Length: 361
Ligand code: ADP
Image (tube, rainbow, N blue to C red; front, side):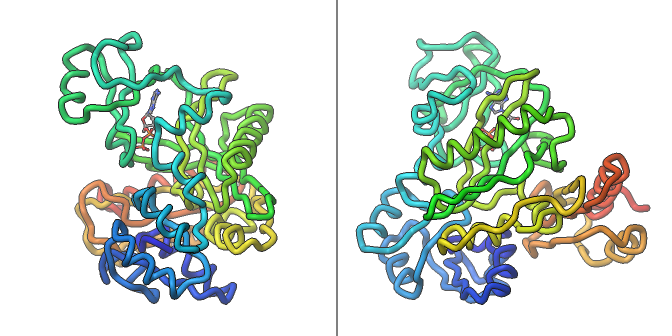
């Protein structure tokens, strides 16, 4: 797996259980997953370094979207089995290509601009075409001055109609080389300042009809793009309409709940899909699963809060990424599954705030 952040870290346990030897290509020995799993250290933009790494592997996959597409193609040309393939992966890396490729799917109105002439009505959303994450690389543009400011920094932009959505969802889908495909229950993602703070599965405000439609869309996109692996399809929900926002072809924050909340987690499923094994059952083990991201705050001791939180709620499950604590950085998450959604969301909100030091009781 290229990348050794928290997504790779959470892939270690299922790989171990399946008896799959997971080797990581890390940026540093201190990366979240490099601390606990065999790895080599190198630059993921360096084709020769990745070719050497691939010699030790039967299959190569990714936990982030940063490996340049030319490098992925270089690996493929050298005969390395890379999943998802560059043909699929490009749509996850490049928002403009994704919009062009998915014109038959419901989406916000969009345009590509490199000057101010060809606009949508203000206000609209501007996005960098690649490299954005956690809302970095997304701007709300209210007037020409806003636009000029962004264009000064980033000469080519994707601009999109600002969708006044009711809420956001993500559908995780997995597809294997044998074209077997499954989806998990659609998840509501709750964001603050562009960062996902919590998720609720299944998305409680989504009608059954729309949930089915969202799952069909995700399966259909996975099939059209010949995905091998797992993918998050992020969507906006407005009334009875769905809009595709973006794709992420890797395990995703909106699927962390599947570790405790589903019969097969996104991490295990990703391994099954790329190894072309039959996929596992994605159904939920409880009516609801709620996940909260722990963002770096004032508390740097991440163990002391366990005492209080574990005593308060024995159902709460903790995941720490062992990343250096920085303000606003995702450093772990908590999940709880059960029947009473109100109670579950309260438990998660409390645990998140307590872990990051915002409350002290
Ligand atoms: P990133 O790659 O940083 O995750 P996204 O494209 O998912 O960027 O955008 C981040 C957030 O910005 C979305 O979760 C959503 O809240 C908001 N957003 C993005 N596009 C639109 C849009 N067309 N209309 C309204 N809000 C949007």
